[in-house]
Length: 191
Image (cartoon, rainbow, N blue to C red; front, side, top):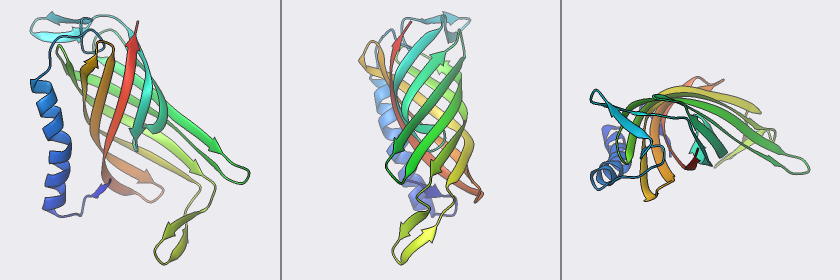
């Protein structure tokens, strides 16, 4: 789902509710855990930080930072980096993307982590055409996406498995379109 900046207020409100309501409900009913949002978090002077480096493997579905298999590293305290990508090749078509996302922790609590993020991804599709109602329109084989936004990571399935959702303002190149996109991902953490 993408929401154009020129869409009506009703669409914006619906997108906000779609993302915000589940995140708020899950955050309210959370309890202690130990993955990226859990026992590795320590309180210091009223702020919580993650006290050691944590690694994660999982899946990410984001227009900003890529689609596919994802690896994440959360460094000591407030910074995370995530790399995502996939490749698909048939006899006459090739598709791939590779993305990077940097996350800065704004808040870390027992089962939640709120973060600001910035990212970039490169997408390639050599089929050359996009299908529309009236026929086919040529599209460039490569596009680049970059932008920034906010996300919330939640731990409520098991001690080491987190789900995160985010919303970002993304610039699609070469067209220059600015679009708001939601994203979702899941990672299994270990150290």
